[in-house]
Structures are given as structure tokens and as C-alpha cells.
Length: 476
Image 1 (tube, rainbow, N blue to C red):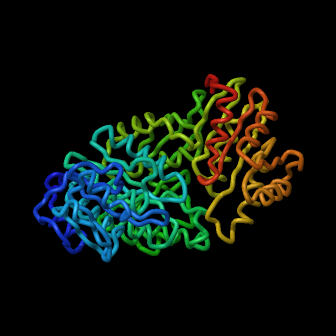
Image 2 (cartoon, rainbow, N blue to C red; image 1 turned 30 degrees about the horizontal axis):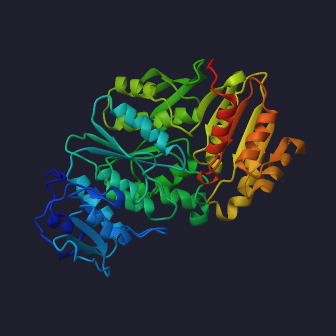
Image 3 (cartoon, rainbow, N blue to C red; image 1 turned 60 degrees about the vertical axis):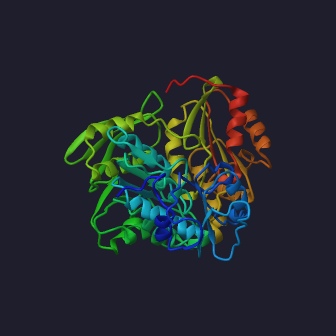
């Protein structure tokens, strides 16, 4: 059987979510699914989700007025049916859990092979690289943006149609049990864990806590699923070993099944390397820079290998990937200034990796200017993590450091301990102040690197610099 919107009945949905039929025709079929009342179309079923800042039950009436043929609500909520007495109403104990149950059922009605990717950093880039490979020979569905949580992943899976052959989804989390639940829903054929880093420590305590949460993917994957792991990540490998599962490893170190060697920055601005697997080596040319992107590419290649993709698709797919806005995006500006926009998010592990990737891009006669915003969800480790961030920036050879957020003094302390001069560390109180400060210090041939957690909205700094200097011409 293959589930298809327009043919899926109330009775089938009721069984999938183990709900209670309050009213309506069990044989009625729905044209689609929606959890946004503003976008609900005629004949769809509206899912009333509850969040910290919203409650979909407040919009049930509007969804029905816009043409929804059915609604899914939590037990106890009374639906005003006077205006539309024929509306299907299904009540469940928890609409979020029921959404996951429906997506899990929907996924199992389709033959497409599913790839799930998690890790402390690189999830979205690896997902896009993997999709670029798989799309060479298969109709592939992928989650949009970072639709990687308990709402986004089910919404993605509910877009599955019979012609899809591959699905690639990423899985994010900030507490224990979330990856386990997402894995139960997606039932991946290939489960990949990219790395373990200092993220979400507020809810997970320490690196071991993060590793335990990430490796829930292994625990909940079926025995038939193939496991892909970063063989260079000692913490990950230690925690993965307790499950006794065979795995395909990727990395730069010897002994990995999929390995990258001879990494070189390309004049075009990307990076090249040799990709070795199955006893053969192929040259790969990425259109994006950075050693961290080599590791993302190795993960994507390992995933594709598990799905028996031909080497040609892997090499061409990786070569076709052109990067993602805000994720180590290299932007040439006037006066031979290079802006590295890594503003989408930040954590200590990712900062360490991207600083390492940024250093080779700094021109011989140019300054390296770093703009750093707060890194969130670090709990008790926040102070030490920001101090360490300042020290890493100093160690990177940065000429100037602009810091913004509640932990600027910690960053400043770390930078000075790392050897930066006090007058080279600038505290900015706003995006505009940081923009003005960088403009005053930047010179031709300089490199500006920007990074901060999502809450810091550092894309405003990137946009301000781009607006001031205007586009340049790549010559790398």
C-alpha cells in the first residue's frame, strides 16, 4: 500500500494516531495536511499543535472556515461545530505525538529509502551534499532548511509520494529522548552521526551527555539499518561501541572506511581532496572551502556508499554543491576583502572547526578580523566556553576581535589570556556598532569572519558589511 493524499480516509488516520472519532464521516478522504491555519486549503485536515508560544486550538475555527474538512485536537478541547457540523474531528491525548505517529505510519507506506543525519554541527550541509548526490539518479525528498525537530521532521515525511526513491532528513535535539523519538518516526535505512560537540549542555550536562543523546539514533534504528559514524571522533566512537553495531566510518584518519587525504585549497575558493573508499581513490573538487566541509563531504559519500550509489554520482554530486547561506559562506567584497559569513549558528566545537578552516583563507598581507556573538544553551559551561572561544580566536592569529552579547567579558578575558592585546579586543553593544567598528579597522586584502548563535542575528552584521562595501570579485 502507498498512502496518497486524496485517498487517505479519516478511518486510516484515526487508526494511525490511535485517536477517538468525535464527529464526521470515517470514510471521508483528505486532500492534504496542514498545521498552519493561514495556509490551510479546501479539503485538508488541520492539526492543532501546541507550543510554548502558540496553541493551534485557537485557530481551529479559522481553519474550518478556510475549508478544512477535518481537525485533530487534544482531548478536552471543544470544537464549535455549529458553522460546519460535518467536519471530521479526531481527538488525541497529545497532538504532537499523534503527528509523529501519523508520519511514522506514512513513511512505512512508502518504499523510499530514508537517510537520517544528526550531529553537533554540519547536519544541514551534509544533508544538502547527500541530497545532491542522490538526486543524480533518484527522485529525492529532503527537509527544507532545518526542519529537523518533532514538528519539522514529520511534516517533511508527510510530503512523501509514491515516486520518491530517497528521503534525506536531519535530526536536531536539545534534550534526551528527542533523537530516539525522531528515529522511531523516520525508521532510517541509513543512520549517520557526524560528531559530538559542546552543544545543548544546558539540558545534557556534558559531552558524554551529548554523546548519549546522539547515539539514541543507533539504539532506535532497526537491526537492518546501516550506521555511519565519524571515525575520528573518539567520544562518539566510545559511546557508539556500547551498542555492538557494525558501522561504516568516515574521516581523515587511517582506518576509516571512507577517507579524505591531500586536502588543498583551490584558487577558485573551494577545496580539493582525494576520496578513498572500496580500495579506490577519486579526486573531489568542492565549490566550498574548509576542512570541515571535507568532513561533511566524506559523511555524504559514506551515506551514498551505503545506498550503493555509483562513484560517479558521488563525485559529481559533491562537485555540484555550492554551499548554504550563513554556513561558512565566502563572500568577496570590494578592495579584495573576503567576508566569511558563518552566522547561522554557533557552538564551541563548530567555532574551533571553522576557525581552523578560515585561517588558510587569510591572505599573506591581510588582517584576520573576527566578529563573535554569544553561543547559547551551554548551561554551567557558558563562562568557560566563551573564555575558551576568546583564547581560540587569539590562537588563530586574529588581528582584531569584535565581541557582542552577555558573555563579552568572558570572551575578552580568554582572548587576552591567549595573547591578544587589550586594545585589539572591541566590545560592541549592537549590530550597528559592530559594523561601524569593523569598517574602521578593515583594510584591503583583509578577511572578516562572523559567527554567533541564531539568537544573536549576526546576519545583520554580514548584510551591513555587504551593503557598505559592495560585491567584489573572487580571485582565489
